[in-house]
Length: 228
Figure (cartoon, rainbow, N blue to C red):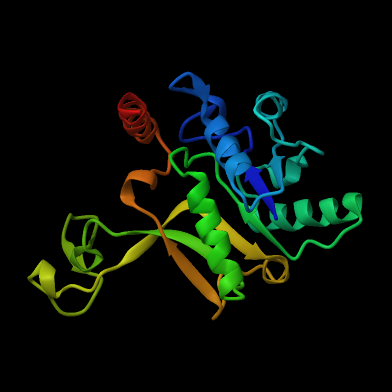
C-alpha cells in the first residue's frame, strides 16, 4: 500500500511548520520515518508544491515523483481533489491500479508505525471503505455551548446532563492516519456505511496547527526520548 504525505508550502497558522525543527529533526521527518518503519507501506509519496519541503523529504527517504500543481495547493483547494490527482498520476506513471491508500499528515509527529499498521489491518479485516484514527474526547461535548454576540450562552444539545458519569463517551478524529479506498475517494466521500475508527491513545494524538501545539508536541517528544 502507498502512503501519501500531503505537505503544501503555504501554511497560515504556523508558517513553515512542515519542516520546522523539532528535537533536532524537521517535523515532516517523523511522519516519513514512521511510514518507512510500517510493515503495511510499500511506497512513501510526498505531495507538495514546495521545492524546499521536497528536498527535505527526499533526504529522509520519501519519494517525490512529481510536484503538486499550484491549483491543488491553494488555500481553497480541496484535499480530496489532490488525492484523486495523485493516485491517478501514480496509476498512469506506474501502469498499475491502486485500490486503496494511506494519508499521513506531517502534523502528527507522535504517531508511530504501529498506529499505521493497526489502521491498515482494520481496513483489510473489515473490507472497509475508510478507516480514520480517533481519540477519546477529554471534555464532554454535551457540555459545549454556543455563545452569541452578547456572550449569552445557547444550547447546542437539548436537555441537560449534570453528571459526567451519565454522559456517553465520544471520540473525535485526531488527523494521524487515514486509510481510503480509491473508489470511495473518487466519489469525493470520506465516510460510508463501511467506515471504521481506529482508536489511538491521547499521548500520540497531537495535531499541530499553531505554535502552542508545536511546543506541546516537542515537550512530549523530549520527555519520551529522555526515558529511552
